[in-house]
Amino acid sequence: MRGHERDVISTGQPPWKSPVALSVLMHGLVLGVALAGWSWSVPTEDPQPPSISARLVTQNEPEPSPVTEPTDQPDRDEERRQEEEEERQRQQEEERRQAEEEERAREEARRIQQEKEREQERQRQEEAAEREREQQRKAEEEAARQKAEAEAKERERQKAEEEKRRQEEAARKAEEERRRAEEQRRKEEAERKAREEEERLEAERKRKERERRLKEQQLEAMAEEAQQQRAAEERQRREAAAAKAREAQMLSESQKYQALIRERLSQAWYPPSSATEEMTARLQITLLPTGELASVNLVSSSGNTAFDNSALGAVKSLSRYPIPDDRDTFERYFRQFTIEFNPRRLR
Image (cartoon, rainbow, N blue to C red; front, top):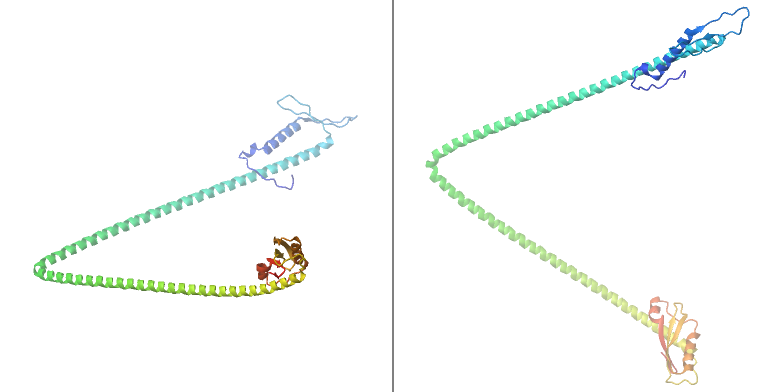
């Protein structure tokens, strides 16, 4: 394509073996053979339609030459020349790009080789420096060892000389040395005993201090426990007193409302004429928190059906029973209770 560059892909083959070069070569060969085989005819007095005969000469069997109009030949030649020129330019451009790619590849290879050589040189220098440091360290160690040996020998020499002088003076100072040694021994023994006694006294003091602290902690714990026990007893006493007062209040209130219920039932009860003072009917009453009757059951019969029915009717006749506002009192005394019907009394 004209006006556009094509990407060049290196295939690793010589430029003259590329498909483009082979195509250009084949086109040139065909064009040369065609031009060599053309024959021109001169028109006579009676001209026939102009024509050009061309013959292609090859090593193979001859083929008929294409016949074209003479007027079209210059244009086709020009087109071929342009195509050949464009193909030659494209080939040159491709060869130039391939050369640039190869040059860049060679440059990159040189750069990589230089980097590798620099890295190898750096490693050699580091290894040389490390060997030099190791040699220096060994030399320093050897120098230190020799110095230590020399100092040890010097100390041994001085010690030998000192021992020699001591032995020379041993006869003269033997008695004095033994005396000083004995005095030193007695002094050290006394100091040792004094230290042991001091350590014993300190250990005894610490033991007594620990016992004192332990006893104080035990006394404090006992006092704390006694105080907590007293506080718990006081709390229990207050709670018991409060519960007792509450119980007394609830009992007093329950007695008041029980009396009201007996009064209401006494007013609503009409015993039959056959009732006697010995007849007693015992009923179990269950109330709702609103005071309404939930249920009533005959627990113990009087033996007289009319008497029992009159007692049941009296219980059922009350639309609402008087009950205390306190829920605990209601639940304990009035949620469910029993009452006895007797002509002489209601209990």
